[in-house]
Length: 254
Ligand code: PEP
Image (cartoon, rainbow, N blue to C red; front, top):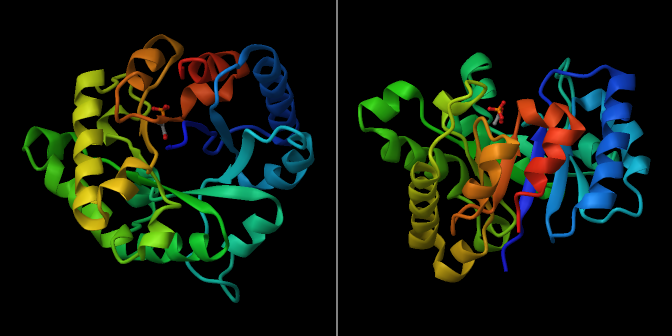
């Protein structure tokens, strides 16, 4: 059975104290209010990870993720953080290929393939992001774009590694814009992604891969999105910065 996951991507927000406060509030609301079997992944900036790990002890469904990792194992790469370092502070997930990294840091599918490999080699689950720009949606190229993002960064993986990948479909035009894909648009793309994975790896593997939706998910649209048969949770940006809105989104999972 595939995992239901809601991941909060804090991006470059929250000082150290603000981060600790947010996680304490999330833990409190989560403990009181969340009854469904949903994995909640917190992806704060790197500086928070070491401090947050002990706060999550005894909460097996609350897990830590990073927002990025280096594609190199170690060495003279000033400013980079390795996958092994992230694992050593308790990360179980790492977001790879977020559209902001593709756009502002020129990360290509080939480059991201190396990050996926190194995350998996360090026993973390990559949350691999795909998504089309508004221009690509409008010119009808979006299926091709998504297919090549999947093929070029993931499809070199052997089956036993592919099983540990989480895919996040995040249409670029919906990120931080307040414009969400409709549940029908999102479901259509998630079903397409599952089919592309099935064509390569077979139905059994594809049926067990979690595919998250991201892009302006809020408490009032989460439930309808999460009810779609191929949407297994969400990758949340802005609404993950407040415990109340984040937990209300988590509660959108049945
Ligand atoms: C994101 O950046 O992954 C994201 C989905 O952001 P937002 O929820 O703010 O659109």
